[in-house]
Amino acid sequence: MALFSAYTVAYTAGLPTASQSTETVAVYSLRGNYDYQAALRSNSLYNTTTLGPGQGALFVAITNTINVTYTCTVFVSVPVDFYLGTSYLATLSGSAWNKTVAQSSQYAQQNGTNSVTFSKSFLLNVTQTVALAKEIGTELQVLTPNYLVQIKPETTGSFVWAGRTVPLYFVAPMNLTFSGGIITPSGTSNSQQGDVTSEVFVTYGSTYTYRYVSYGLLAGTLALLVLWIYYIYTVEKRQEPVLDEITLLTRPYREVIATTTSLPEAGSKIAIEKWEDLVKVADTMGKPILEFVDKGQGFIHYVFWIKDGESAYVFEITSKQKWVP
Image (cartoon, rainbow, N blue to C red):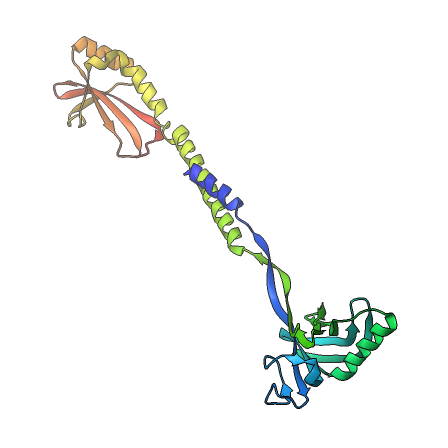
């Protein structure tokens, strides 16, 4: 039991009282998507004068303009305060040169909402773009068979939630590549995700309960052990003084002592004060000594007597300590 109690204390001492973990408290996403509509000249290839994404190749020779619309949505899983801005830069680039053709910006501040949306349209005149690329190539004396128009929105800022400021930065470029007489759009869909985390501290109150129970169990076990030792060295030893005294008295004469379960019958009782005197009587008369042990009165009481007709020589001795059943 003591070993089990000690093991319980050691085991509960090793149990954690607290733990720390990282918990995701919010998630956010930024999505930038492009849509476009190309206005065509009358042509024999398509049965329409407008084309959208996935409806056919954009040939430079039959395309007048391309209207590009950019939409950026910032979403957070919890209501926050947004402080955002988006800057737009449109450039025309060749293999060795780059020219800015348009610039603008937008700002948004919204409180207690889950999302903010930016939207911007760009009208690209294909005829003017081709002419400008040729003009720059001629001026620089650089062959420019391939070139591209890039629309590059940059969204920056932050959102604030529960006193925390989370910075945001998102770039979603789209390219319109002019090559071999065909205009090829790319980068029409861009996205970015993130999360907001928090350090969580968890206290295990049950661990303290287990420890207190184990301490109590150990204390109780030690108390029982002390009582048991006390019992071994005190209570069980209480009879030893009397037993030793009786043993010393009777040991030399055990062969002439007979144990009986009853006291002398009524008649003349002659009290003997000393054990030695009773032994002398037994020797003189040549009779055995009868022994009766009485434990009914709380003390161990010994009665030794010698039967002589209607008379009895009696020697009595009582223990000095109580008898414990």
